Length: 112
Length: 113
Image (cartoon, rainbow over all chains, first blue to last red; front, top):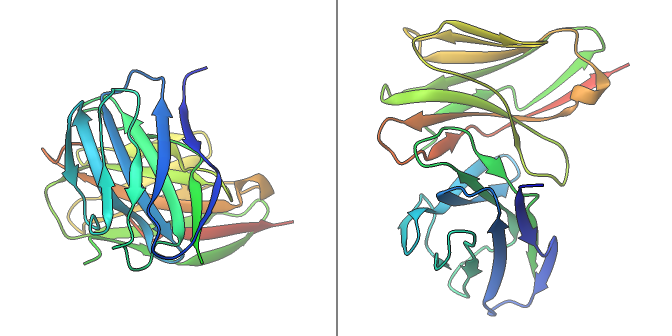
């Protein structure tokens, strides 16, 4: 079955450490997205990529980095520069220009 | 700046009742308005969507009403069921914006027996 896989489901890290969240899709979608979800704030766009080897900053890109070396993969690194990294992170994908997103099940990151 | 304002933040409805969630926007360049449903610990799933040239769209018990002049749209869930208890997000996409969605802050719906 096609879908988006985010791993791990839960992640704990010490403050000051970088951490990478995985996102893999087998839907043959061109575009991929990373959103951050916090209680009462909805989903906020971190980064998005429409094609391989190209990506753009979203509304809250500071303290995050991404890469898009393969169509299927769009990993997100939460760096030590991110001041408040504890959140639920959601990866999504879509066909280019197509409106509907398919979301993964998310990764809950807790920084202690 | 919140480009899509969603209300209420939470909603309790009796089984069989109508759930209504509202969203408002300012950017007239939005050209696509989807609603997503999210269960705890899961990613959101597309529920229903509408274009601004349509005033209403119905899929089963779910209806979107769209008022272009007022820049408002709403989700109506008819005959609400306990299984509808979830968080609902409205969203909007800017024309030519690379299919990026701007989401509302979410409404936590609880349907009681």
